[in-house]
Length: 399
Figure 1 (cartoon, rainbow, N blue to C red):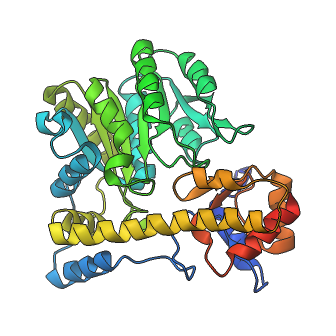
Figure 2: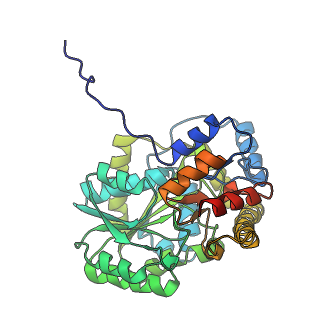
Figure 3: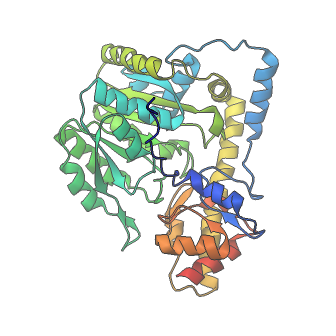
């Protein structure tokens, strides 16, 4: 009998998730994990937000039955997500010309978007920044899209190669779906200005592109309102576009898979039709989304007191990340490192692109027990007062 699976080769380990496995296997006491994509507190522990802990307790004590949610998800969660993304009084929200589907985290939202564009809209090309989050390209390919890259990171000037980006995006065929990071670009940490966003928007309009704006870090750059500025600019433009959002980071609900896909159309009639098509894709994939995480988010966002507490905790996380950026840059300056690391303070969000080569990243892991992705991305949340000086000395040593 022929063994059907005999010739299947093992897949390569995930470049991001594999970092933590190597860190845990390292027996050294002095080691640092800068690869993990979650928020850690000053003690290096995953943070459980106080307001989330209380809402979890309330939900458990309520004794709600574990019945199926509708395919499109919890109604209150979807409504509150739209208001969070576009603003409560946005025309997109008031007119009903956007449909929001609860998804399995931001990852699931991107997968739904790619499946919808390929299988319903007939799109054949997707695009992502160079570099981008490690899962973007795989998701698009698995959905049947041909992936093209556009320039983004300017290594020579530590910023965004905006003109290169415009040139590459302009070459995409009409109907293509470019993915743009709306704030806190992962992995570089460099964001565009609102003026650049406006120019990019007009390019999308003139070339018939249907962008997907990925916002996994709302609230981690400047604040909830400011971080949604690019998306709200697109919403006011009348352009058709998609938005993938996630509460994994901002609520610390990583394992609950709490995300959403929003499709912005020209009318409520179009939005209603799109909803049914995305629902059909979800039904054939995972059927129904989980309820616990979405009920936590809805419970917090629908209560003014709880929401204020959440926003205060989110601000604390944002401020700690900023302080660690400044601390690392200051330590590098203090020890006279060969490279000026002040650029790291001009980046935003949880991640930073250091500019280190794969060989330098290997040295950091092998010689110093400092683990991160080989492309040079580090998670700033892995830094704290007790390890930032050690990390700075190691960085300086491999320069």
